[in-house]
Image (tube, rainbow, N blue to C red; front, side, top):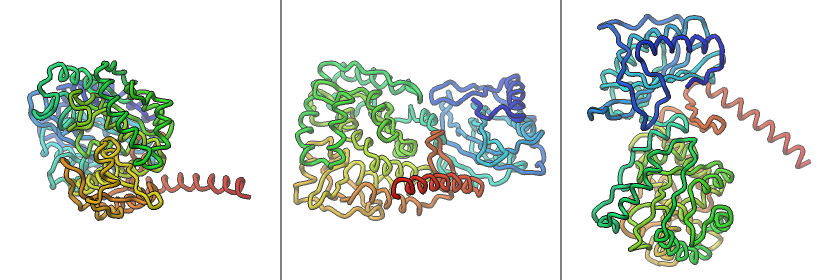
Length: 497
């Protein structure tokens, strides 16, 4: 899919794509579940790339492990480079691509943030680390500032950081990255020995399996038994919210009742909830088959996307679940994504996770645990719950507020990041925040000190991540901020004078 405007460069792109297709290269947008062509662009043995042009361009590389049809490991790699709009530049690049023995899965272009230039993205499946290094080495002949963003653990590719999604549709690559649960159940799950329940789980998870960005999420026709299970949980928790939930949650919950069908005889549909949340804060809800890895789950936060399961716990134990289900997601998580300050805070965790190291990701996971899952807020001289793990557990919702047993500490991301947590019992430690704004500020400061060679920002207009890794991008960003400040100053003069 091509985004570059119809200039001389993009017209040449169309012509060259046609010639590449004649060589059996498949040049199409990559899809998480879409078939990948086995066709390759052949390169004669020992045929080098062309010599560097007079004006070297910029290249970034991203890669993550996949598996081929025969089970062998592939490294999904993205080449990102910028070229100037000059005669012959694009032809040089495409001529070199033809000579590479790689399986292309996508090529696209768009206007660059650098004036008079275009950004290009090329995806291919590398057979090995050596092939990634060979391609990168070849591109160094005509580009500079090679940065490698890779899911591979090798340290011999310069400036390597984990792959992360660049645009919101890249979240489709997470569709099958479920680490546990979903349609598969552990032996100690209440529904493990119930074939009807397991078949029903499979039916519901197929919705998430087939969902893609831009789709409307199909409704689930919940059974009377499933609605009854939801009703038990809903009624039990609703009684505790008035006294134990934070004021932001108490403000939003009646709006969800009014607009999204939150009531004991109805399980809300994700599509209805997502539209309402987006109107409030710009967040959207998308279905997921089961538990994602921390990296995938947090990366989606950067795009203001929350992954939400649609299946429900087993009816035999309505007040217990060993996993996140629709009760935990909709009753515990969703309401606060309608609050602007909380929504901004959650996105900061997502932005911090993009390209961070595994060690930093583990620290972010602990911060997430002690805030979004099990956080407390101070309201005057009282404590209130805002964590989803608390707001969806009637037992711990009371325990976290009234029990003298747990330790309650002032929220400090540096301390929370180093504090281990149990997952099979009530928390022995809770962190108490003063406000969501204060949390956001603290986590933002914490994230700015992560060991990451670049800064990122989310562009809500293009729903994409901009990596601020060179002077031109930083200046463009500064100019956009200056324009916003000018509007703010003008508005203040009109309103306050």
